Image (cartoon, rainbow, N blue to C red; front, side, top):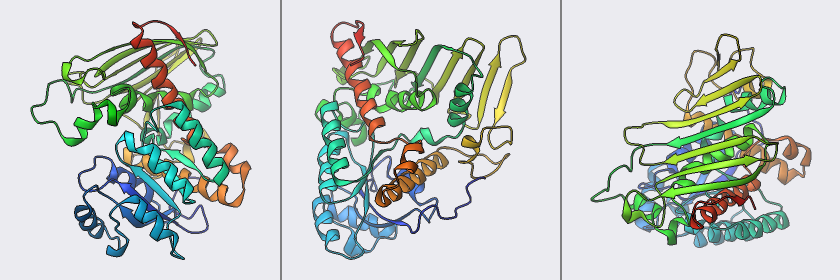
Length: 392
C-alpha cells in the first residue's frame, strides 16, 4: 500500500530546528521532508540562525511563534523544557564542527536528535553519543537525504533474493562540477566546507561520498569492507589540506572489489550520482538523475528498466511510494520518506517497541558511525601516501 499521509504515529512530534535559517543550504530540505506528512512532525520552535534577529524574522516568516524563535540552542532547550508543550525532537542543520556539542546538549535535555552528516569528526565522538543516546532512551538519526529513494530498497530486495547472484563489483560515484574553479567570493557555506576546523578532516569525502557509502550499505547490508586505498587531491590549492577530488578502492570480505569516485571539480557535471552493483548473473544500476528508474541487466537477456510504483516491484519498495506511477517523485520525497521513518523510530523508542526498531530501515546512529568510520579510514590511507589500510 502506498503512502497517503495518514498518521503512522499517534500524534505529530513537537519539532524544532537548530540552524537551517534564511542563508542555510539545507534547512528547506529538512522542513519539506519533516512536514510533507503533517501527521509526523509539527515545527513549533527554532534557533534558526547565528544572527538572532535574522533568525527570529525568518522563523516568524515560516510560521513559528515569535516567542519560540530563540537566540541560541541552549536558551531554546532550557525554555522549552519548562513548557508542558515543549519540543521533543530537534534537527541539527549547522556546520559539521558544531554537531557534537549540540547533539550532546540535546540528548542531555531529553530530546531526540536528527542531525546532518557527517555526524561528527571522530568515531570516538559517535560512540560516546551512541552510549548517551542509549542511556537516555533517545533516537539519533542522520539525514542521508538521498537514501529515501525507494528504488534503493528494490535493489536491496533483489540482491537478497539472489536476482544478481554473488556480488563481484561495486561501482560508486558522487560527483559534480560546481567547485571546478577557484571562486573569487565563495559563499559562507563553501568557506566553512574547506576549513578543517569547521568541516573536519575532509571535504568531498564527508560532504558527498558519505551519502553514497551509506546508500551502498543500505542496498548491501551484508557486504563489509576489509581494506581500502584512498587517493585524494586538492586541485584548487587553497582548499588543501582538504580534498576536492578523491578515488577510493575497496576490497570486501567476500572477495568483491569496489570503487568510489567523489569530486566537486567534475567540470560540466550536473549530476554524477550513481550506483552500479555487478553480480555473477546480472547487474543493477541506479542514477540520481533518474531516481524512479532502476536498470536490471541479466547476462544474455535484453536490458530491463524497472519503473517506480509498478506492481512488479517488491513490497518494501512500494511501501514508500507516494504519488503513483507516471507522476515524478524526487529528492523532496526521499527526504519525506526518511523523516517519516525517523518519526516512526522515535515513537517506537518512546513506547519501548524494540521489534519495530529492529525491522525499520533508516539512517540511524550506527549509519552515522559508519560514515565517520569511512572518512577516518579514507583520510588515514591518503595521508600515508594512498596506501591500503585495514578498514578499522
